[in-house]
Image (cartoon, rainbow, N blue to C red):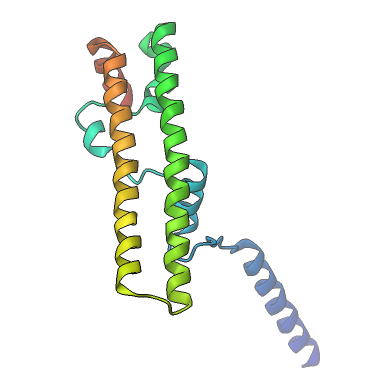
Length: 165
């Protein structure tokens, strides 16, 4: 009986330890952002399909076109232009992402410290909308510039390469 209880206890402890080691959920340091959103803003990679309207109408993201530079036969000038567009977009994403994180931290702190008032709340929520708009504009501007940097034939080939087999 004691031996059975010991085995059950050991198995339970092993199971709990294994579950804890494999189920490590990463949390964002900002409560109002998921870990993925936070990391995306921090690294300059978050876009949440904000460029979908451009991409669906054949205005591609620069990094996606650069991925197929050989298949598309991009010239050195085109590669340089698309790289410049992509670098500029990444800088904007980092800058705007940092502003979004700072804004979310300010909102969180305001509520946590119970210092919410109408004026401050209006200010920070309007800032949130402004930052989201700036990010979307940066993404869409990059798509427009990318379309201008490639030929119509390259665009058709790019569309073909993007289609799932």
